[in-house]
Length: 364
Image (cartoon, rainbow, N blue to C red; front, top):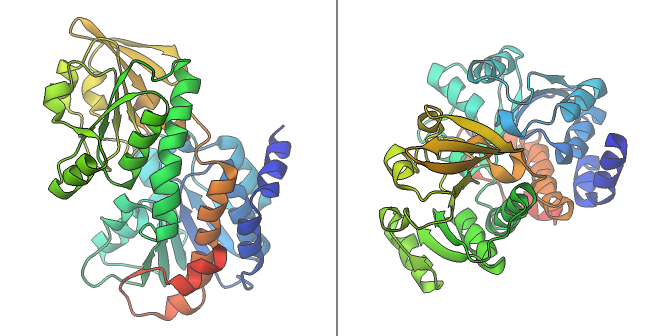
């Protein structure tokens, strides 16, 4: 069945395959990829290997790793230090192993390896880097990076497709599949109104939810109001909300005080890249049990709170994530970015750049 899934993925990811085929010989490249390791990554990594690149795989999120995917790519020639639900220490050690492997290029989602290198001021052999996430971009050095770093999270094609549409759509599809419930007659609170939050709110309404938005940034609050959402303070609605979705990329957005006030029977989920938006450490102080796959019921001060996917990114931890055809665009842009950092991009002055339009538009 796994091989059939790979074949099916390749059948529907033609943009990616075209971009990978256009890559030059990569015999001189040692690329460390710190990213989600699910089925949809196979066409890219396998393509890099076929172009003679040396590849080291780590993960940006241990809960989204598919072990059969890692095993397949290792058998194809990659090296890896990643498995599902690796401990926090094992996860951090994987970045150390990637650094010790002496990569020449980095392809990251979250800037974990880049952050470590810049904390130490020792960049090894790295000559260029590609960064894919907003949370990773926010961690990039603002002054004197050690090598050129190309941000492709802020590209219109990624913001408008993956961030704005696919995360919200697939998060709620995963919610339905996991809970066997819909959003009808449910009050849904979306925390964060960036592009991901906008998509989460829109999809929740399309699926029948009664949607509210909480956002700290004044400009985004105003935008949410102009988009027609009921803009609220979390504290005002926490006791009556049926489903809470965090989409901020920040830590402990939903902390202990708010969790204490939450409604009995509330579902809490996260769709942001950071797995610490919900204070899960606080919840784990209370009795809990898995009542359905990826749903833990916490007995919290006389009520039950349902935490989904242990606070990690719901759509990729408990679900499939983006559709093949949508992620084909994302991954094709990623492949075009890799082509850039192993050619002209690696000769740029050390700085943070937006991936040039002349590079990514070839993927469309």
